[in-house]
Amino acid sequence: MALHSETLEQFLSRTHEAVPGGLAALSFLLTHVGLVGKLLSRDLRVAGLLNVLGTTGETNVQGETVKKLDEIANETCVRVFQQSGVVCALVSEEMEKPVIISNERQQVPYIVLFDPLDGSSNTDVNMPLGSIFSIVAPSRADLPPNERDLLRKGTDQVAAGYLLFGPSTMLVITAGKGVHGFTLDPGLGEYLLSHEDMKIPARGKMYAVNEGNYQKWTGEMRRYFDHLKVEDKATGRPYSGRYSGCLVADVHRMLLNGGIYLYPGEVKKPEGKLRLLYEANPLALIVEQAGGLASTGTKRVLDVEPQKLHQRVPLIIGSRDDVREAEHFLHGQA
Image (tube, rainbow, N blue to C red; front, side):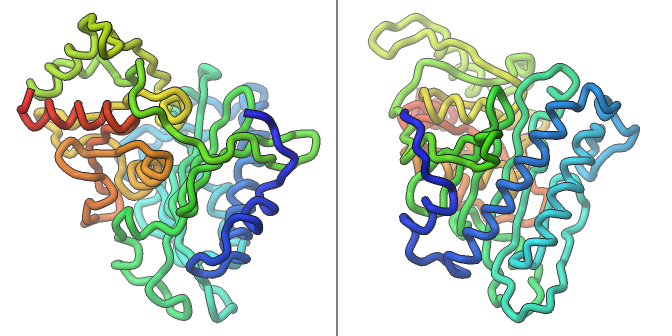
């Protein structure tokens, strides 16, 4: 796709006439998401020189070891969103409880739920990393958010997106009118429209999954995975395996080239690993807006009713026909 000279702000003003909270507020918030990307991109470029690789020696609310860059990324997100003036609450993978932001402004239209640094196991080996965000509106912008404001179905999202830190820094967003990618021009300090109206192919030729978990999966999941590796020219099998250890990078590849990403539930952990509110929901909205599907294996991800902030779900996401075929196997129909 050819690179455009249109900035993020220009694009939003051209394509979005009305959104909950107002176009100006959403545009301002997405500009701050972009600022997070600029700050983290700068930190990641020199991480190996600043003694910020490795772990902090602590564990987060998920029981996972905290990388130094996890902590830096979370602090950066909280600081930037607090200063935006259009956010009343923040929910993060790295924080046990939400941050409620008091603001002198009467109307504060948005809640941001985010994974500040996705793929943090890649931080020490110079592999792709990402950040994921979900934006919802509280029931009343003039009152502090309540628990139900934070525990929202994926269909309630106003916007969602991710930052991808690779050879270039990209911001991919949806606000209910398709999926659009912006590439950071470091010389200008601007995100320029590079991938307008992204569409995922109906079927792909690759899968992304941690194959080391194979013995932990259900029989139905193992049969589907084995199916992907059986030669069949009519359906393009066997599929090629591509797994980076960064959810954002793997889903981005599927978004551009088609295929399927799998992080299924396990026999002993049927709830899966990925978090619903700030990983599965935002990526599901993006992929659905691009023409794909996102499933837990039994239902649409965006229809899952959240019961707690750090709820986990299985995730099967990618090309429409591939996800439907996986569900067919998981339902015991193959």
